[in-house]
Length: 169
Image 1: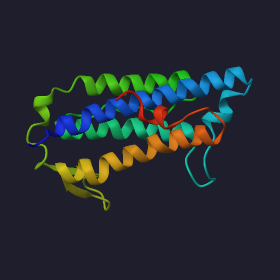
Image 2 (image 1 turned 90 degrees about the vertical axis):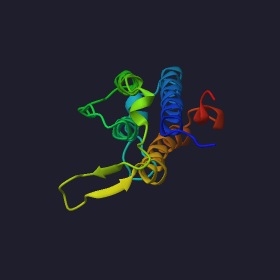
Image 3 (image 1 turned 60 degrees about the vertical axis):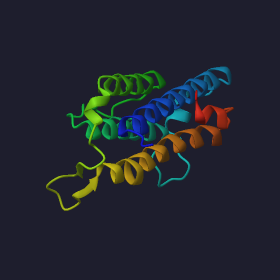
Image 4 (image 1 turned 120 degrees about the vertical axis):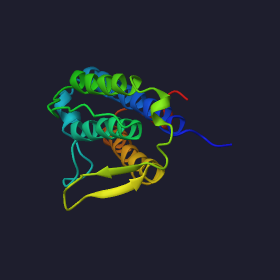
């Protein structure tokens, strides 16, 4: 039995975007309860050379829309990367989910063999088959940023566990 590229991507992206949204909600509630400035979490990072939480969420959302949009062969919406608050990050996740929801499963048909070209026309241009793009590049990148978002918040004292990371299954 085979699995469609839509089934291998969209439900996973939605589950983890919901998870990221939920851990951000818990972080905001924790900051309020403990009288911690939200910026302490929003600008937190695991190590000085890593991006802060805000950027992790932005990149995670970008990978989600990029994976779905490229496999469906539609133009990707452009986001400004100007979020500064929990509410703005939640809005970013919501508009990413809304974009993904516009993509019909039929658009993903045949995407496993289609070429996905990243950074076209640049020295960093890279071409993947749809399958390689999804499983070897897109999902690992997406999970890295979702995991790092979780890890930053957990490291900074937000009461999170594996169930929070996994979200609703």
